[in-house]
Image 1: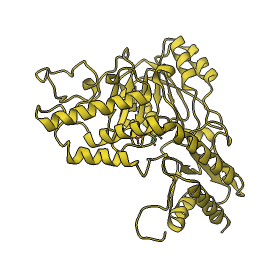
Image 2: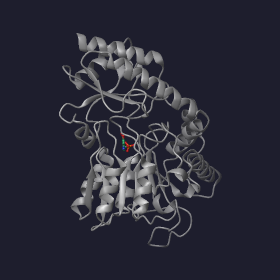
Image 3: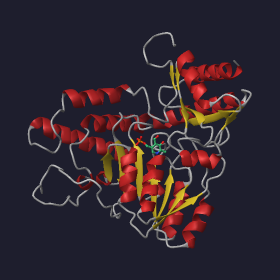
Image 4: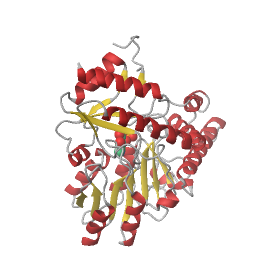
Length: 389
Ligand SMILES: Cc1ncc(COP(=O)(O)O)c(C=O)c1O
């Protein structure tokens, strides 16, 4: 066991799953929501409910500024990236549609698509290469082959850290009259996202990973021209309660039910932090990832997955060992060294199949805010010990 009986790790290297710790501003914003802004936003005209509504409005504006979304009303708060992916896919695809998707997708996309395939949506999977990259030429070939409603691709892989060329894919999709739908769970917060430059139609992301917000909140950008069918109906506050239908205005159309005020305010504080600190943070993460990849590569028996050291990637580093299995490594990292990391398939069997690790899984170290060079040194020493003992 690590020195203390507290579950707090000595080094937290599971930012691919969720970021921890959070910047002080995020903790403060969540606390403020719980202690000062407890009214139900949009559900009352008394001061505390109005203040909660206003704080949510500001949080949405800050997130829009970070992601380059021109009109913050096109940015929808969701309970998770998974919920955002479901809305983006199920709200736009119908039986008879054809969709072209990369093979590195997380189950947040793979499972809704497998579900839609059973309802009559044709799902064409384009194979990524051994580094996890989906080649835009391969996507174009498939999009040309038959009328296609949408191209779907992740921004970055939660297994290999590979950054997909989503701007190029968007150009291809649009040239052929298709939509470009993106799962940005591992993108936003770790790489610059400017929706205006990328020109994509929808971008779903988690609030609790690179965006540094709390768990239980996510974001979905929907282009103003995109008609997305609601998947959840219910109360939206404001006027128009007598109507049996959801309002057509965004964001209310897609935000039925009481908002997650603590989550949304925490996310807004994470976005504000990234607006000022993001560039420095990204440089730091890239440097730590390079240090980790180079270090693991010198340990006998390890093979690092994904792009080579120095090539662009989000700061996720996964590896396999030729003798010691990933679960055993993760267990020893935690119990003996107090290092939090994740082994297995990472909810991404498609991705593991693509790079040939579906039978063994991998050990994943996800770098993020709060990590230091000492954390990486500690992890490297621990990995060396584990596989040599
Ligand atoms: C690529 C990718 N997409 C989607 C998700 C789902 O995110 P959430 O758990 O916030 O719904 C994850 C989470 O690990 C992910 O890595």
